[in-house]
Image (cartoon, rainbow, N blue to C red; front, side):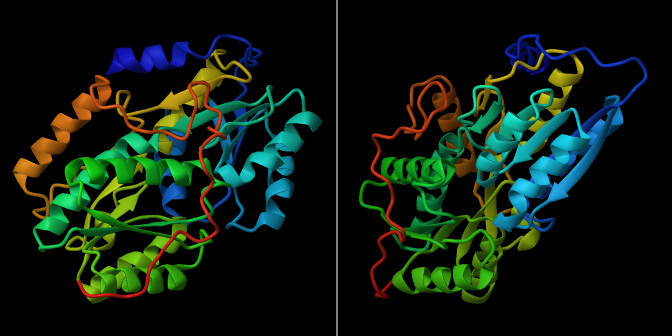
Length: 349
């Protein structure tokens, strides 16, 4: 694994100016989300590790999904720091604007591909881990004599490629596990509306979904609340969310923001950060994965099946659909998702 880390960091060729001796590198980390969001909590480990192991000074800026704050926060971070890390695809436009105004500052956009050739990008291929989640969902639903599962996402897929990538992998895994499985799919249309997500989850359960995958930011907490009340299973996102409800949350599709943040900061400190480069995080480098909970909700034989499938994905024996081209750009040829995913009325389980 140490070798893989070296290989990853070597992909960022040298271009950044060397640090001045004995002067910590000032870094601004801007989050589109707030402190309670799983994306922020997933990132904390990387920030803490960088502060502990590297000569850096890190300041965090949280926008709480307030779009009016995006441009102001990124601009403020650019004025005060030499490296700006923008965590969350909603910050893409603000990063582009700031990068054109602050040419001496290095910018990295995480969870989206920047259109600015001077901005580095970090992409998570969440479809690969979502494939495993789809298999898991179908297997656990079958134990409840159901072929219905659900997925609840945040912003519209055509605006947020990551959301579509979650859906593509989850649906492919579910269909490969059981060609007769039915996938109910909806969008909350917000990263921060737990009550709406809760209502959607309850309606999905009324229609028969026994396992629901939520990738909707802070809205996803409403899905967990519904599961506790209604008695269905949930698959979480970004961080091990089993702690939210150990008897309800099966596992989570992890996007290792902690790993990516530390890698990027290390590259900049070491002088290996190339502007415009794109770093890809997949199953093979553990940039995405399942949290592999140790609870008793997942039988050992199913855990072993998921492990075998993960190796097959790494070996490319299973090719998981993705919304990204090889260079990280969005596949414009894919049909955009409608404002609200198709969803029929309540029915019998």
